[in-house]
Image (tube, rainbow, N blue to C red; front, top):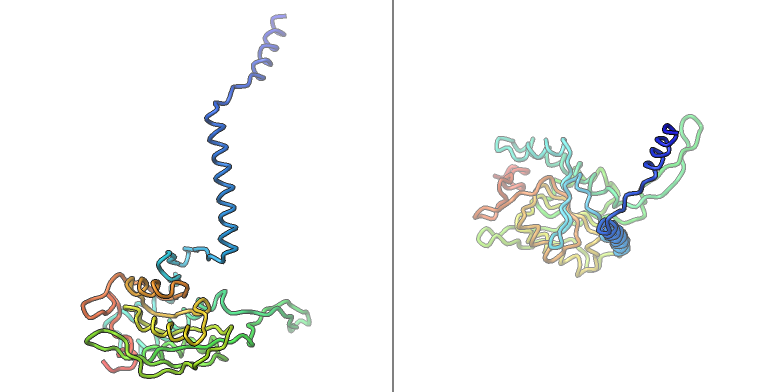
Length: 279
């Protein structure tokens, strides 16, 4: 009897339920509501085509700035170090710029170039699913002279069918403003074309803003434009974002400030002079 009573008592103890305080139930309800709101907000942002922010590539995304991607890649870092080094000669500097054009261009083309699904026959006789770049989709390269020419050699092998539209700007040393002396932009740019602007140094961003203004006047959609640069300053990004927040910029580094001559600091000097040996 005593044994059975103790067993019954133990069994009864296992069936005891402790009351949950009401505040815990309230906390759980609030958490569920917040999760539902977050899910709904994410769905709305996707419908509005607001891009996500994958920081594994140091992608800066703020409401007043354009989208800036700084790829974290050892080859890009090595080429940038070569460009920054004051002891790097013209030949090595130009080769490093070509390398940066290749690697940054590779990143800029990611999720940007349209592709077509197809099938190819392999040497084994089997058929494999494949994707090829849609050659019918227009892509045009816009190098900003003269420094932008140094990047063309690295980018062109990636986009061999691309047209090249040259635009030329010189720097007014007194005002640090860019003055246009050449433009290869037509009066009307074709709809649906993608544009890759090559501008090695974004110091104040004034030159790029002028080019983007001209392209939009000619019918280009800034959302279809990507900019490839070696360096950008925080000042330039703020200026560009104020006028063209939807443009995407790919660069090797974002430097914090400008000096009294409006050169990027720490920077790498004058990219055009160093690439073409005219220092």
